[in-house]
Length: 165
Ligand code: RP5
Image 1 (cartoon, helix red, strand yellow):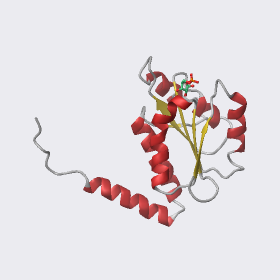
Image 2: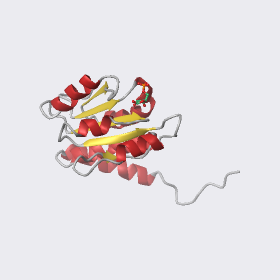
Image 3: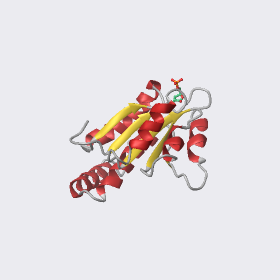
């Protein structure tokens, strides 16, 4: 997806995480950032996780957006095996509304960083935007697109609220 070798990897622990992680993918597509999307489960496909994390540097990935829910070990385990920046997205769980996911991802021990985002759609969207910002530091065209996106967002906020209800 996108032109050329993937610069960003989007991984998720389960197919059930897709509705959330789709928001990160949508941002990457909007900015034309080459990316790949995979299911990588810390618990159900541990060998796939190891292969993915250990190959990330060699394959040229610049960021990995990792979403998981519940006992969300995926982002931290990936971060333990690669220096590629890992952006963690807590997926909203049914049992605990994503607080379990959030705390699993954010409470990394010192030395193994995972940049942790908000629970659910906002977190996935912002992880996509953050990856774009990381890449924009070395890509003038992408930087201009990101500036335009941010300006459009600002322009879209009306100064006076509509009186509803
Ligand atoms: C996590 O547990 C996944 O990221 C998903 O959010 C949740 C359910 O996973 P499955 O039971 O579908 O494998 O590992």
